[in-house]
Amino acid sequence: MTPHAIALASAVCSAVATTLIQRGLRRSNFYAGFWINVTVGMVGLWSAVLLLVPRSEYSWRAVPYFVASGIVGTSAGRLFRVAAIEKVGASVAAAILNLAPLIAAGLAIGLLGERVTPPILAGTLVIVLGTALLSLSGRHVGFRPRDLVYPFASAACFGVVAIIRKLGLGLAGPLFGSAINVTAAMVASTTFVLASGNRGALRCDGRSLLYFAAGGAAENTGVFLVLVALGLGEVSVVVPLAGTAPLFVLLLAYFFPSGMERLGWRVVVGAVLVVVGVFLLTGW
Image (cartoon, rainbow, N blue to C red; front, side, top):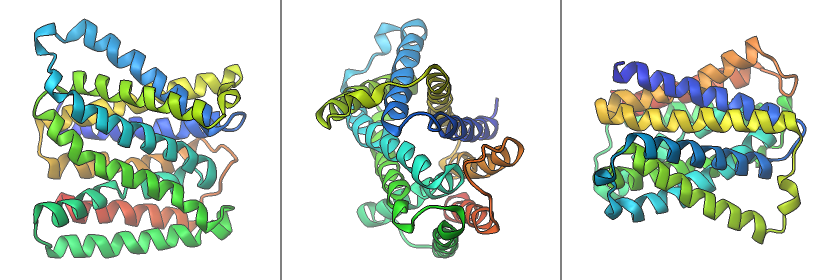
């Protein structure tokens, strides 16, 4: 498979995961969805590492980077992501989560001295317009504008962690790094749930468990495919294609309506504008 096909497959996996998590939240809560999501990822990735990665390729120098990425990105990022899906719906959450490349680009400009180009300015303006439409859609779709803090917080976590993962990938392969990443997230998420006194919230019925487990498998597969695509192709090609997940979420919501959210024109146009903005920022 080409990097283009792998990146698009990652976007589809992310969209499927978002839709499945939303359905699981019908009869459960975001604590259970978040914890099951991370647990499924840890079991699946370590199984793959033990089967496919030789012991000689275990690079322990990369562990600190992937531990940090697991806490910041996988643990905090996914916690806010599941909360965002519960608070504002799958379509709006997926669109705002696509701001992570913009945050990463801003950090690269501020910390690494990269220059601001016309595509970056144009992409930023388009993303701001799309986000404004999504915010205005809250009154029509049924969420409070202040609930947008959850998807924005998740996007910030994923944007920051991109730089940490890039450093770690220079020392270890994507499969081993992903396993360390999700293990650190598992420890952090379990500690958070227990410390917050929400241990009882981890209980859920069989149907929600299946949705959350399937969503976790889809999401972790998507993360691994992004790492594989980055290893085979250029970032400027892989990132925009992987960032088309909100469009697939809209398609799934149209063909498989859940009854939990309405797809108004503001949601559709706002999601499309955010994706176009990402293309302007990174695709050119």
